[in-house]
Image (cartoon, rainbow, N blue to C red; front, side, top):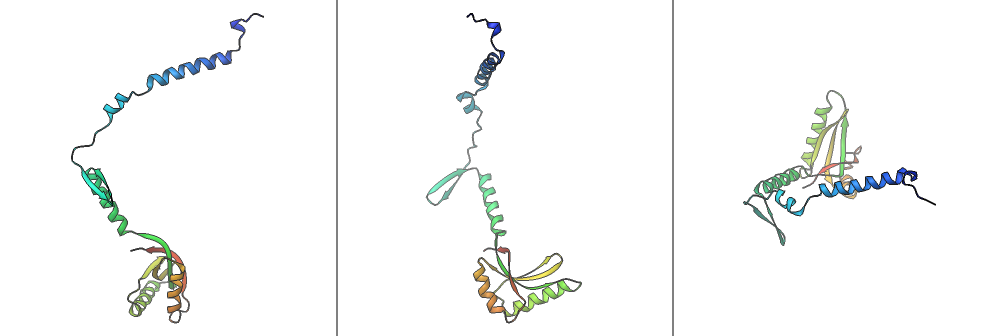
Length: 161
């Protein structure tokens, strides 16, 4: 049997040709180690050394200022999921005034605790405390249940110190 080049299927030849062209193209476009080293920007000379426990990191002064700013923003807005006790919820034209009065009455009795008045559409609500666990909220809820019989524990974003 004689093999004729013209009678061979065209698909494998096209595939081999495309594969060879791809390999040659990738090799031509590859970076050399010397080229990458020369194009890499070098940090400017002034650096600040920051010590973290037993290790130290050299960084630009601008980066140090940026990290300090981000840390201060995080500290100012430390929020976490936790629990609060809701003692009031009301709607209407006088609801805000009533909520602020309920908050003030509570703070007269428990000035060491935190109380929050906020608009929770369509109601004004007064919530107490920043409790990380349901058990902490439950303990305080038992303490104030006599004064606020309609109060209940809710999941909320709490302020973490």
